[in-house]
Length: 129
Image (cartoon, rainbow, N blue to C red; front, side, top):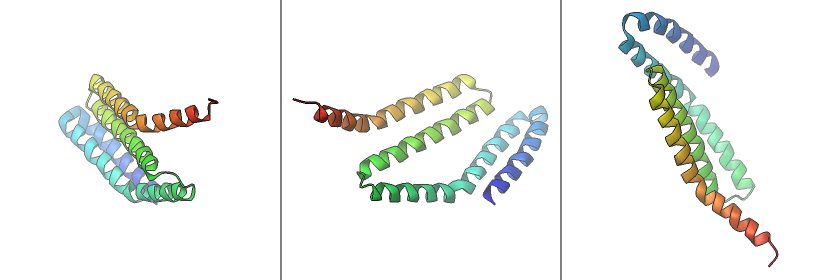
């Protein structure tokens, strides 16, 4: 049912945005942001369910919880950066959107360093002495 609600909200918002952009572009931007937040709020329960499943899989595989938490942070940063970049594009600020995407990539790389170091240590440990 959630996808039907999201599609319905998006269709109504799209029609309103087309009409508003001609007369009141500042209101169109506000409607775009409110619609994006509404869609995100509709997905919060689904996102929480996915996180729970990933945590259960990680527990069964006996993965270190630090790595699971880091991976979830990376996914969160990716989604937030994309969300912010799309809002900037909706406002007509494509240069700013590119900077938001770059910042997201840098933060993801920074978050991934401990995982990369653990993989490198594992590989070095496998090499013959």
